[in-house]
Length: 430
Image (cartoon, rainbow, N blue to C red; front, side, top):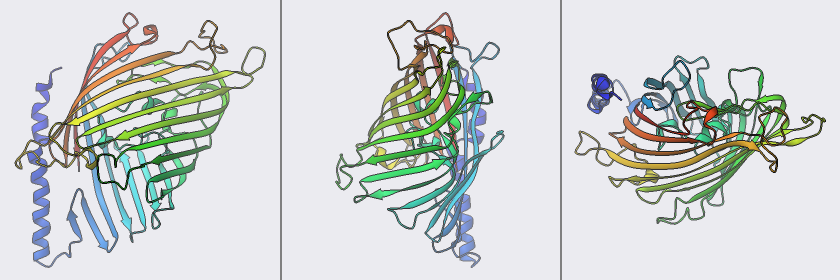
């Protein structure tokens, strides 16, 4: 991978000193305006440039750019190599609050056919019972509901990317009870999220979806290494029209390794379990999720077939070499670059698996559309990474990824079950 060719671009766009200079310039301008009596601290630069309209009412302007350099032993498809620069995200948006009672966020992806991402308002005057409405992620999966800015790895786990619902229009009630030890979220959404949809209109996905998630922090009140321990569970339930599923198996670099061509009809149900623990500079996370799609009256005799099953899990860990507390975030290093330090440096590793098949066994698997035992496929992935948080605006990540397919004939390299990929990401957040 020829990273040298990108260096001039990085030094002019992403180099921390340039970002810091911009921030300091804005700060200086605001201070000068205040001294001249032209502002009453209405414009501020905290983590973001913000405009304040009175007590408890403000708007923050946000932007995020992510660019990836990718190289892989496998091909994405027959005509395109996986190497090269990929603009992963170009997002702009605004967030804020109104009278300390309503939070809101508006975010759009530049250059996308479906530009709107999070567009919602949240009434939060009572922490025990809050109400959120608009377009946002369904309450399912710790990894999927972690902001892309704060991911420990360049790509989310395969299970979160392929099986968790993602965003949709809906309304949700949520809050924290029992001295904030228990958090809950439950809502109704138009469909079962964007992750379960493709551009193929002949494929089916979940209809009106009920989704819920509960988390429990048993030691939240303690002031020691146990306080951040959190366990959780989630579910979704939605009707499923007759047809072929939109769920599919893809690697982190978007190479297809499974596309289900079996008839479905009935209900789609997801279940998920999660664990997170971040003691000091370390973190440990794990999740399991399962999607079961019914196949009512889909046999050659018009009887029910066993559900089509997709399931996945991951186990990951990180270690901040520079000593920052993971629970407090590494995006604000104790000693930022060019301000007496080198920023925060973190090592990360993850092992995961994503599988497709059916609940039935005992027969020879088949690729037929009405097979009782589905042949399916699976991808086992190991990811090793290093993260550099130069300051609160700039983050650079490098990941080495190993994919191993159970059936390589359905993957990008039919003659090879396992292959390596390498990805370098540059992130600028304002």
